Image (cartoon, rainbow, N blue to C red; front, side, top):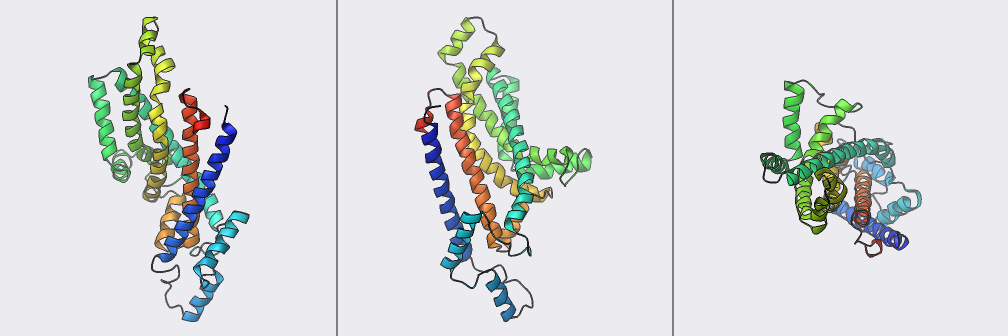
Length: 311
């Protein structure tokens, strides 16, 4: 595609600038919140507490801490040691939890796209039918119910009543199924409504009527001609959906006892573990920026009128 080089340069500059702004704001805000990572240590003499803070350079001015940590991150890609997990590095914790959280997010997003797109297409093709009303009613209910409420209901039904799935843990598809469905269900509802709206708009265009006039089957017209244009609103929603799935996984990982980044993120925020919280924030921010880049590139693929050089 023409313009891919200039797009890559502009997007790389934008990503780096955004990461630096997020890093700076997060660093300042965490230091301004009352309390510190070692304020809750019991029966620790002031001298020992001072030595602990000196080890982690917390006795230095904030601008010195900022410069040292930023230089360590830029030069070595190292977020430093965790303040609350002994000698564990933040990079090590992220390396262990990242594949788990990403796997959960991918399964949830695939489930949401598959179910939502299928339901939206069927509703648009069978407009105003009982099936359409039922699917859109279920989608409205799915949007209204938070994922943690859905998770609680699913555990009661599928774990305690039907005894079909495990309540918690990680390592098998049976353990992955329930949290992925609970995480992806609300976004499947949004995608279903967006797909239905996009499909109805495309079905009313002249080239669709021409395709039907040529004698093409309904299935071929939908799949080969209408679906591509109907997915443009869905692609636009992938950025916010990814953000919602990442933040939603923080809660569900705790509910289902999944050893991902979410549990470490929450603990880091509660215990003022500065380096751990910074590492999690930067990883989540980078994932969102990359997903937005993917969404922008998808526009040029789905809609020939969109030039990648103008993105």
